[in-house]
Length: 249
Image 1 (tube, one colour):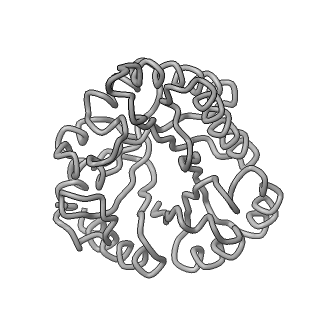
Image 2: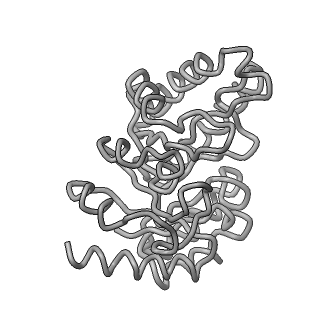
């Protein structure tokens, strides 16, 4: 299934965005923050009760750092992520996408970021298992102070915590690691384009990613294709681009 996603949608009422998306998409991966977070769960449930929209949940990531060298910040971040698990359970969603952590200003000198992240992922994995949810850990873009950019990092995080993998094709391309990431076995896939140097979130075909090759390499993938875009119009353009290429497979 082709799904739409844009984190900026979370600033608007869930029902309003849902009505706009469902005119062109059967599915939506929404970011569980602001208007679309746990505190607005009743409104979300009410909106979905009148729709056949298929949804996926993306855990919150703004002002959240599950790799923080500050123990209290890390605990609070885990708590916010777990709230999105509870939202997923309420909405009968069995998988949730999660970002790995960030490097704090002194983190590289401190050297404890990976240790903190692995401890957080153990907790997150346990919390997800209790709720019968599968976590898809997403690879991140190069050029930002974030962990989980390169294949060896993601592989170690997944293996240590029994997590699934969310392949973000655009992020992998900025890291020069798309080919290696395509050897992984994702349970979720994010699609957007860029020029290889910045995480631009362009419409598919507007950058330098060879999506024909990506689709060939992912021919056995059976999950949803989550198209990420800066606007609904851009999402529609990417959808048509992807349909054209999938139709020839």
